[in-house]
Image (cartoon, rainbow, N blue to C red):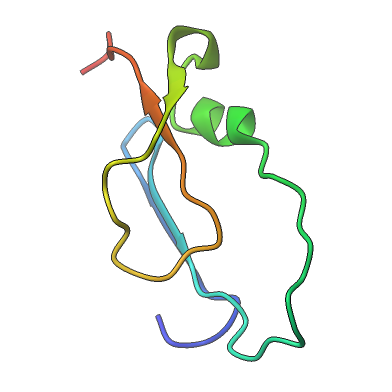
Length: 79
């Protein structure tokens, strides 16, 4: 992935989100204020019940740059 706006999505055979990557804008006009992401939508797309996980400090470093990191703790019943 090399161009601004490119997305990479990995789904399992049931359509559950396994991985999501996006390429941010390559040029910034300065620090932009952004609203926090709706993590509930992302957790839902990944097949995770947001009520069964709790937010924690993230431990893993993503392979590319980021504007926000987040982590959750919980036990999966589907894997």
